[in-house]
Length: 150
Image 1: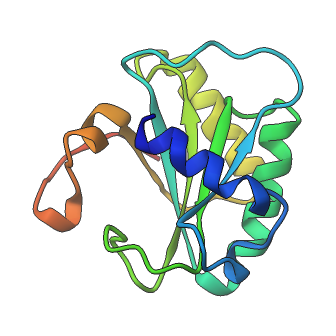
Image 2: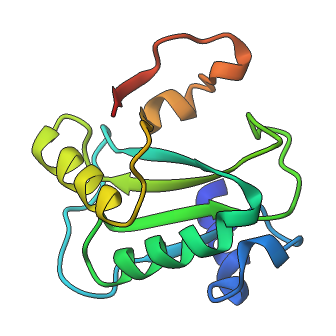
């Protein structure tokens, strides 16, 4: 079983919990419940939304509902209160909103527009999952890894 799948299964009991109150797992996931969305390709990726910890529960609730309603991609995840050694900013929590293929610019930008409607109006980066799997992180000195920044 791969790490992502294992993390998803471990987080299932927390699917309706507030991220700020969860200390047993690193992530809580949301999954689409309405409509269809393409399966992830080898070019999947995510919008990265960095949120002040005091606002993470409120922002996550909006994103989780939008994912489940079929307004975004197929899934999203949010960092919990459990300290993660890979966390780039200790003063922020990250929410990842996934897309199936970063080369489908129309879909990537559609999802970005939906995030704006939810109140995410500041510039945010988009990162390919391949870069994450290759352990490319800004905090480790990698530059220009965002496919989009808007």
